Amino acid sequence: MTTASLTFAGVVPPVATPLLPDHSVDHTSLARLVEYLVDAGVAGLFALGSTGETAYFTDDERVAILTTIADANAGRVPIIAGAIELTAPRIIETARRLTDAGADAIVTTAPLYTLNDQAEIADHFRAIAAAIDVPLWAYDVPVRVHKKLSLELLIQLGTEGVIQGVKDSSGDDVGFRRLIAANDAAGRPLQLLTGHEMVVDAMLLAGADGVVPGVANVEAEGYVRLFEAAARGDWDAARSEQERINRMFDIVFQPAGLSGDATGVGAFKAAMKARGLIDHATMAGTVTPLDDAVVDKVSGVLAAVGLLPVATV
Image: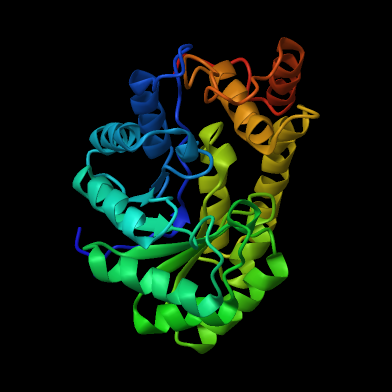
């Protein structure tokens, strides 16, 4: 797979990181999860993102996680890996290690902790792109970074060839629709993936290249069907599949009063365990686990949409 031919389009799930009860990485479940996702027909894998709980791992753990994902994938689909760090020098160091471990592309955010303007953020991405040998993507996730990547900045970096694409987790669908239009007007220098998993049908209709859906860790086949329906122009089928997925997505509304990480990833992991995709629903060490009553509610949602009981995976 050459850099020139590398694309991330279609369904590119952010791979969750299964953990053992002692909070160490469950590499056996991780390899099984990758096998499930690839067999389901996904077009790529997004490693070490928010759903993968990357912020909670050491550098060595991140490399080990990526190595397991790459080994299980065995070159079948491209892997984009999150090098999420404070500033460009640290991101470059992490990105090089992840590339050596099997990443085909790197995605990163604006600098963390620092107080930068858009011009400085542009130079941040330029410095990273110049120092790595694989394509660089921008990860627009202001809820975590507290900085929004402007439309003008992204189109400029795309036109310069600094970034290949954008993973949009801003939740700003108006802004994303404007980015699609601006990208079209600029000759489509960027590939654009939405992380807003409840409106994927609408974003594909608007011109998005694909989706990075965390809940695909629970059931990936639905998103693959949705994307295929959109690709053939069957928007009724795409909308119907989206509505079914949205009923499944109710799992994230079962926890209450917990942090964002505990709520979203916690619900995903509880559902994945219920479906036999992973062995434990353990969260990172400092994240509050879901209690049994909430886990039962998550299982109830899955049963209501026909995802329980499950045959052996």
